[in-house]
Length: 104
Image 1 (cartoon, rainbow, N blue to C red):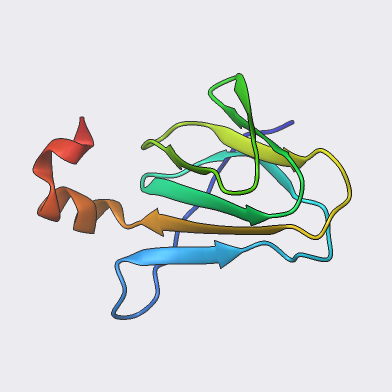
Image 2 (image 1 turned 180 degrees about the vertical axis):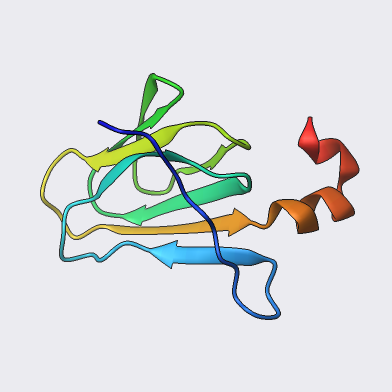
């Protein structure tokens, strides 16, 4: 599968992009990367396989996890279920201005 770069567009007046997966469909996110740090929260559903730089971790409802700058990541739901997963991708320029050490 081809790895793509996601050009993250933030929302006016907010230093992040947020997303919520359609709960009526399985979660399939192709391998990609972006400059911002991503924070995910699996609220409901079944277990979710998340691959970061080739390492697979299975998350369960209630789990919160982060993906660092430029880490290649993808996701796949394991079983059909009513999923609710919410994520934030923090604008890299904003984050580095607020927390200069974050670039490392």
